[in-house]
Image 1 (cartoon, rainbow, N blue to C red):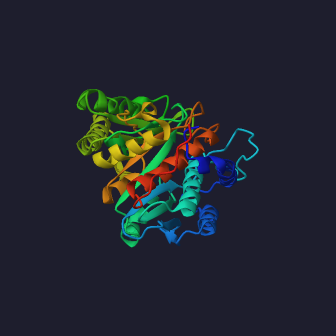
Image 2 (tube, rainbow, N blue to C red):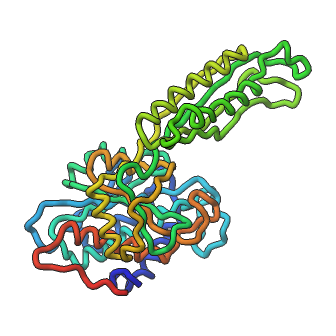
Length: 398
């Protein structure tokens, strides 16, 4: 198995940590048990510094190398929060919290970074500092931004920062990355339509908001199909329709909610402008009024070219060049690691989770066989970015 021997030796222990985290999922910033678990492990490993409460409930551990000629510091980030989804698989370590589960693999991300922390604290075969970032509230809460705004980068002297995410359907033991945008920006919209309610038998006396909403839903699909350059990427999705309560009443109001996603800022602006114009004007054409509320979400996740090449090279050390895709297609999902990359150079990589249910699915589970790959990637990244004088990384087993 092409991972670091020492990490392979304690992979079962890391798996047990992952199962414990999976059984006790927590949401957004309310990750107090998870953060305490992480901080306890980091202290037990002998980290030189363990800071809690960064970005409300984030944890940062610092491990200094055995050489002291460099003040450089590299950040490695894992997310800790779960999702408000009811788990359906009867796993031995299934969620003990009704309506909550680790359906995105953040339990695996946290466990892998803890595994790397244990190895790095034992060996310290590098010159500088490994800054281990455990972040809350990735799932819509902007925990990455909160940690940045809390001065994390400056406090720990982070010069570059790296992140990863598991990908169901991507082969186990592979990595995939690209320079530039690798994940999309996201914005939320709410459209409130007001017409004139009335009896379903007399539609001529009403302004039917259900009909208006239906036309708006269809018209919004013209944004990507007819306003966007076919070579650009954008998604407009109406995800909720709220209207009416009775079978014989035309409702006074109707509501639409959804998201817009883009890889480029200009496309993001276009989607916002066209959505507002279409909703307002389609409603007006029917004699109704549409009020559009736009809420900005995460920006696009933009990988820096030099750091992307470096991360791909390190991944190739772990799994071999043939197992690293260096120009993978971007995903239209969003990721708040974007805030960290906006403040420091770095890169974000996808790691294969094998044949599993999709992310955010009630049958999803992180693949424990992926743990040695991710932990080895983190360890090798630190040892390669911050080489100790006269040292060479430990042998990779094959």
